[in-house]
Length: 114
Image (tube, rainbow, N blue to C red; front, side, top):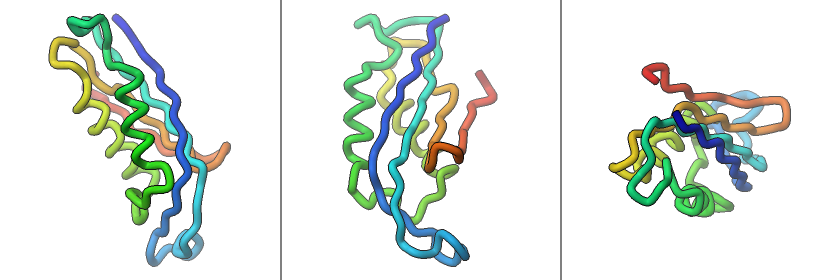
């Protein structure tokens, strides 16, 4: 069994309309931790290419792509995006994604089927 842990970060603003504290437009330096597990590597020897994952998160930096999303929603979205780039020849998938809004607050999506 193989496991990768990938740490990425990006700066972005978001606004949770109707929320008493987070309803105003504000920003965070989001830190994301992705865990990918699998028992077989791709034909190229990867579970997933780190460089391909970095491309995903580069697209979120200062982009407005997460404007009205909670950390929980972001975690699930990032899991789907990373799963989509895992090579078909690898028997792997995202096990969990953590989205840290602050050093003390994170939301985690977990695939309980693994």
